[in-house]
Each structure stands twice: as structure tokens, then as C-alpha cells.
Amino acid sequence: MKNYVQAGNKLTISAPYNVVSGQLVVLKSLFGVAIVDALQGEEVTIDTQGVFELAKEALEVPTGSKAYYHEEAGLLTTNQSHDVVVEGQPDGDGNPTTNTQTVNHPLVGVFVKDAATGDKKAQVKLAAAPC
Image 1: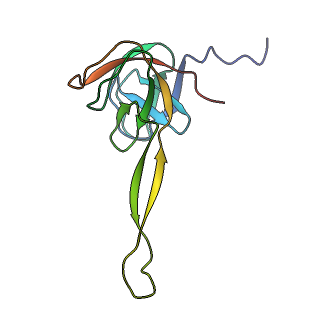
Image 2: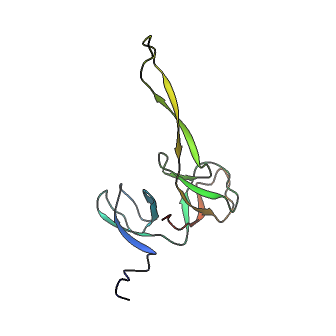
Image 3: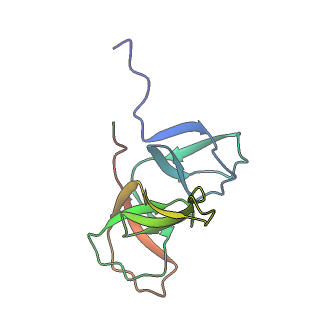
């Protein structure tokens, strides 16, 4: 087959931010675990398949729960989204206004082992990247 490129379980991308080996790297809909350290903009190889122990938010995680990536926190969560209050334009009287926007977190896998609230990491099986 002349058009085959690679298996796809390891991909080399431009690091979207500084990363350390073993860290989850998320670039839009593409995600994986960094194999080596890399500075932002450098090439980094990520492993896109398997089960990894990754940093999570301080919450209880039952086995089988979906794992979402909370980009602002840089941690995994079971919450699909969170709300952010954004300042809007002043109203007609010059008073400040606020709006609430929902920020969706990308699904990156499933938790494969229970983790307690106090556990800093949890085991996650990476999901296939959406196409």
C-alpha cells in the first residue's frame, strides 16, 4: 500500500505549550501523553493510545467515568463543562453587565480505576481522537 503513513499510536506534533514527559498534551481535538520534555513550539512525540496515570482535579472518580480535560486547570475532570462569568458592555445607565458562558471540556478517555478525592492522579484509558 503506497499511501500508508504510520500506525498512528505515536504522533510528532509542535508542542502547544511547554510539556514534560508523562504530561497529557491537548491540541484542539488531538491528544496524547508526551514521551519527552519539549518547549512550546518544539517537536514532541505523543502516545495516543493506552492507559496512563494522569493528574486530576480533587474529586472522587468512579471506574468507568468519562475523563474530560479542563484546559484552564490542566487537569482531568468528570465534568463535561463549567461556567465562566464574562464582563459585558455597560448597560444604558453605564452599569457593568455580566454574562455566563459555558466552556466545554474535550473528552480524552475513561477512568479505569476508582480514585479518591485526595488522589492527585488517576488511571485513564485514552479515547480515540474524534474525526
